[in-house]
Every structure is written in structure tokens, then in C-alpha cells.
Amino acid sequence: MNVNDTDRIFQVLEPFNYRPTDDPAQASLILLNTCSVRDKAEQKMLSQLGRLAPLKDYNDDLILGVAGCVAQQEGERLLKKVPHLDLVFGPDHIADLPGLVERARAKERVSETRFTKRKEFAFIEAAPREETRISEFVTIMKGCDKVCSFCIVPFTRGREVSKPADAVVREVERLVAAGAREVTLLGQNVNSYGKDLQGDRIPTFAQLLREVDAVAGLERLRFTTSHPMDCIDELVGCFGELRTLCEFFHLPVQSGNDRILREMRRFYTAAEYREKVAALRRQSPQIALSTDIIVGYPGETDAEFEDTLTLLADVRYDSIFAFKYSPRPGTRAAELPDSVPEAVKRERLARVLALQDAVTRTRMEAYVGQTVEVLVEGPSRMASKGQTTRWQLMGRTRTNVIVNFPVPLGEFWSDRWIGSLATVNVEQAKSNSLYGTLA
Ligand code: SF4
Image 1 (spheres, helix red, strand yellow):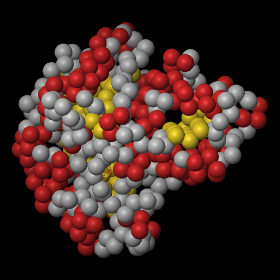
Image 2 (cartoon, helix red, strand yellow):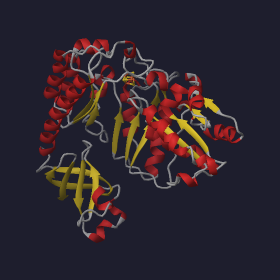
Image 3 (cartoon, helix red, strand yellow):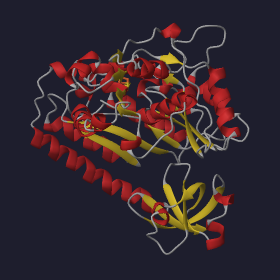
Image 4 (spheres, rainbow, N blue to C red):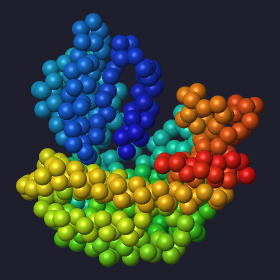
């Protein structure tokens, strides 16, 4: 979401002649876009602001601002803490940014963190850039109405607001016309899309997927993120049926233990979650699954943690994002004693990662010998850095695995590959990518 917000920040500033620069000393406006889902975001941001402070000594025109979740949470407090900070604004105020910067230029210290009312919230539609990427993001909703005890998002992003379906489809059409081949629909919980919409036409998320799938020229469709409770049969039925919908689903489970899930206010049991996974695999046997795991939630016992390991071993995800629990100020879980010692959290995280490494390796090795469809994005990372003697391109499978493959030198520099679908025979599996040759 934050990467997408950063794109929107560039988009709203561009008409006012702001252009990106890699050199902070040349900048007339520096904005730090922050995330507070994990710990230490605020400390990192404060040290970054400290490093930037000297720039203001010799550049009177420089405006220094903080955007994103930390800005939303801290607001005025941040201005008090950091005397050389000019501007603090939350995610709901990206569209207002040019005006906020002007106020800061008039020497006002600006803090804008009020949530916009549901009915008044207006999305910024992504405009195609000069260089539209092969793979683009389209925000379809903001905020979250769930109440997960550990999560800061409802406090930093507010209530759910869905973008009208016509606007989503229009945005996808524009991006595809400008060169995008893949679109990822974004939201904190995209599965509950539409519940807040009013009027005659209120599509469900599955219906929205069908509408986007019908956009001419779109090759691939993805979405993130989802709550298991809203992963209903209608959505499961879209996999394998919609041409563009990729066989990949990020379905955060967080824990494999029912008591911890109850404490987390996730409103499903491990058995119900497993049934969703089984339904997805029945519908789409090739589907790749990923998840989020939190270890060391307050009160998590050894036996409860073992349930998470068992679930991981049974589900055999393609990849996971695992974290040690850390309290987020203002959440319900932060009121509980953070009772699992740091050393235990560390050890649990290491066990989760070790188990998953072995599973991921096996799942990656299973690709060797297969022929896969790769949406080509550009030169491989190694080729970009000049670290290979081969002219390699890279792209992703429909299951979201990176594939590197060589092409002849003349072909490497030609534009014809970028955005095309290549057929690749997989010859080698590495920890995070595959290597193959053109079929
Ligand atoms: S569904 Fe996701 S974003 Fe919403 S409160 Fe739960 S963890 Fe946070």
C-alpha cells in the first residue's frame, strides 16, 4: 500500500513541477512515507529526519514532511518532537498535498490527519506514467473494518471505503492502454470489497474480478490482501475460471492455534482455515499460497506455538512472511502483558523460518522440468548489475515465482520481450528464483 501511496504522491505533485531526484541536497521537498505495521518504524523515521536536518541550514526553501501511518498516528506530536519538521499528513490527505506544501512554504507548520468521512472520500485514480510498468497496482479500497487485536491498520487507515467498480475498471483500462499487462488490485482486505458501497450497482469482490478480467489486453490479474473469513465460495470459484486471474493467493493465517486466533479476534478456527485452503486447492490444484505468521503473541504457550508449526507443515505454503509479535501502541493486544520473552520469540521465529525454508525448497524444486509461462518484466537483477556473462531477462510465473532466462545478445536489447509472455523450460531451482531456457 505504501509503495502505491508513494506513486500517488508523485502523481499529485507532478502538475506542480515537482520532479524526483536521488540527491537530497538538490531537493526542495523531502517526504518520508512511513509504515507502522511493524516495530521500529518511528525510530527509523526519527533518525532519518535527524540526518536530513543539516540540509535545512543551507537550503531555506527545503520543506521536510512525513506521510503515511506514523504521520497519521502521531500528527501534531511529531511536529513538537521534531522542530525542523514542516509537514505531517495522513494517507487520506495525499490529494490535498499541493495545498499543504504551499501552506508549509508560507511558514505554517502543518499537521493534517483527520480521517475523511466515508461519503466524502475521493480516490486518486492512477494515471499512466511516462513509463508505465508491465505490472501495476490499482487501489480498490482503503481502510479496514475488522478488529484484529494486534493490528494498527484500522487506526491509521480508518474504515473501509470501496472505489466504485466503474472507476476501477476505467483505471485498469487506462493502465493497459499505456502498456501494463498485469494488474494487482490492492486493499487491506479486498475480499470485503463493496460492502460500504451504495446505489443500484454494488458488486461483490468476485463480481469486480469478473469485470476486470474482461478488460481487453490485460494478461494477468492479482489481488492482495485478504482475510480468511471473507474468502467465500464465490471468490474461490473465480480461480481456474477467469482467464487472467493468476494462481496465487496470499491468505494470512497468523496462528495455527484456536485460542490464539480467538485472542487475536480473527473469527475463524484453524480447521475452518484449513478447509478454505482445501477448497482453493480443489478448485485450482496449481495454486500457490502464501501467508503471514505472528509468533510470540501475548500468552502463546509452547504447545500453542507447536500448532502453528503443524499447520505450516500441513498446508505447505509456497512462501510466508513471519514476524515476532511486537505491541503496536493503541491496539487491544498492546494492553496485554507482552509475556513471551524475546529469546523465546526469536527461537520460535527461527523454527518457523527453518521449517518453511525446507518446504519452499521442495516446492521450488518441483518446478524443475516443467514448462512455465513467464510475463517478462526486463533484464534480470544480475544482468542489470553486470554480474553475469549471460544476457538474462526476468519475469514471473502466474504463481508469482521469479524466472531468469538467457536470450541472444541482439534480443536482449530489443524491446519486443518486455511485457510479452515467454514459454520457459525450468532447469534449476534456487532459493528465491528459477532458471530456465526458452522453450
Ligand atoms: S484484517 Fe488485516 S488490516 Fe484488517 S485489522 Fe485484521 S490484520 Fe489489520
